[in-house]
Image (tube, rainbow, N blue to C red):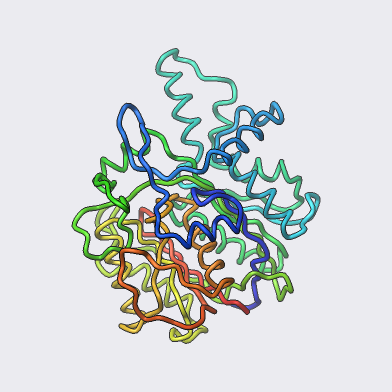
Length: 385
């Protein structure tokens, strides 16, 4: 890293809630936030955002006529973005870039309009502008009235961390001094869940933890979907109000044999983690927040990659998908939130059904991982100073 990149604010909406204190308290329990809801007449495991937060979404939707036709991914992104810049003191007229992406995009609205089209042969007037890929960042930019660039992309489940990579390139180049980055996902629809079932990776068995993320002994796939949005404010250089600093970044694409596969030892993660560590001794890393989606191959291959890079005495390992499900394009930023909280409180949040190992007394450096369909891996190393 040529210059320090400070994380000066992070805001989220997820099954954990939206208040930092409540989010941390939820992490301190061994209880999952996954429950059963009915979709298309069938009960499915999902992790949903709290009811009181959903009322905030509806309040925003009704606050102006221009917001009434927007997809929930956009409304979630607007809410967390407003809070993030307020917390750090950025003004709506400031010059800062925006890069907020999504894996599925405006899936709720797209499915609704497509269903109407099949029935009537027509679509509402605003169907196209409200379901385009750039819909999230452009509406956040409109809402915040910022004077910087706005960018959108979809790189499956590593979308949010790719937004971080892109922002760092802008910041390091001198073309920007501040960037708002993240991901938003509101993909809890019957069609999306059916797609995961078709891939034979979705959880079917009930229990204390339907999603057995990072359980290397499980015999069945156990991925569960969640919903949420999270964004962070990035600034170049040392900042007194920094929550943490980005010390290293890495990225790689796997050579895959199948659309959803990953190599047996996750070569993409080996490359991305090695790149993120190029200026850091691996022994200095205290913890890793894994991608660990709860699938048989995904969890094991990432663990093998970690062993390849860090050896048997690897950092403490954790994940949050057993608690909040897989939030697709937003998941990487929610991993960052967990990393920041663990550093702030100097307390490791373990996976309750995984044996604890390699305890570290302090948590000063944490790596976060994300990868999506297509093997697009990102690793980001965070440091307290």
